[in-house]
Length: 284
Image (cartoon, rainbow, N blue to C red; front, side):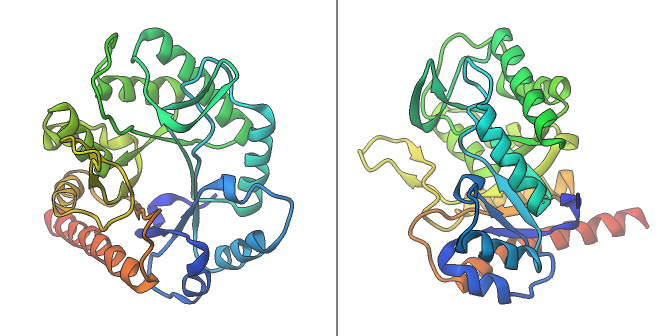
């Protein structure tokens, strides 16, 4: 398996951009896909993914393992995910710190939970089961928050740090999620990022957001707009502290041209390059 630290800034792969992605020669470029869209036996999607994987590294970012649920991950889903990972040898497989299935009910969302000791034990077990099945370490993404929940025994940073240590997993740090959660819950995003466990970060996500269309003061994690200036500032601060990390520009709605996304990707790559040069100068 290739290491994610060989990669620079990447893009989420969209079907209308397959040819552009295939032809692009930007150094360090990689692509992320949701594995659920490719866990099939054959067809044009897999053929395109094979072609792109022959030129660019891939990362698999799952949305449906429901690792925080009250049950173990679905065995058939894991079997299909392993087959896809074995076929494409992604630089990283990642998932969310959330649940979507509970007591045989499915909810099409990534839902929160109280960070209790029992939840820590349950999620650790589910991550370890996943890693044992896949035969590889995975990364877990910090969630987006919209309201305060009662019943927490751990702060989010303490929970993520302990989860990484117990499960042996890495962390995927979504800077946009931190910015939104800080706004919605009233904490300082920069302080959170300054304390995030750097050694566990295997990948970083950047995305856009929007105000709540219902008129509240909430920010919504829409992935339908360019990365906001505040998020770019937080990202620059983070890279200055932790150094080079593979970074993804996420865009899932109101998809612009490939060239427009590539411009955002190039901005992230420039931040990585600057941080790398600064570290080299400090080492002299």
